[in-house]
Image (cartoon, rainbow, N blue to C red; front, side, top):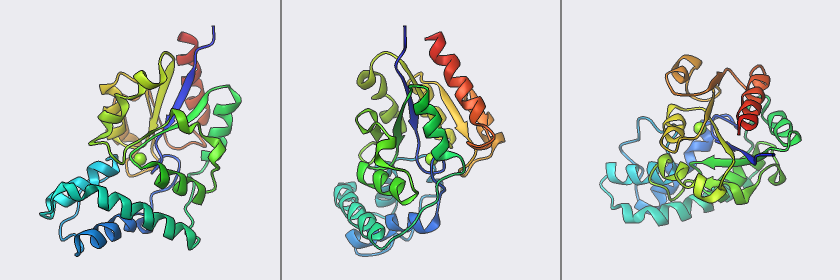
Length: 227
Ligand SMILES: [Mg+2]
């Protein structure tokens, strides 16, 4: 019996490289909606959802979190505008090939990300991925999620039985996988080292998707045969 297997990829630091320029749209959107740049910033943004980050930034700077919807709308507008100017992002080494190898084995590539759907699409396209690389219907987007736990809790009800593996680059991805009892594979291509990620419950921690690809595929294969 074949088990439906979904690989739920994180985006930032996992499929694409983090970039300072790319992060500036959050500040720009915040400034536009509230009328002033934030005087206090979030110290540890990695692995947080957009909804969480922006709500925390509003609170920290004395604004009502009811402004979140407006900031998110502005964020989409600015992301699109940035993309239209030809802003390019960088895929992580081995990322496109990893998606290819996953698909070749009959497993589904999907997303579980703190980004909203439009932001996700635009980021991935700007890094050279294509829309058809992903099963968007089986993906989870965190622009309106209070945190990643909220997102991982949606996985089993939405995707049903099968193997659903989280691949991410932060301890937060691991904690969110744990709270929904989903297997987690960590890649150290974001803000955290292999040693940091070994402190999570990850089944496997790899340096990157080049040297680590065989191990990643092997671990998923084991999970899907075990069912
Ligand atoms: Mg990430």
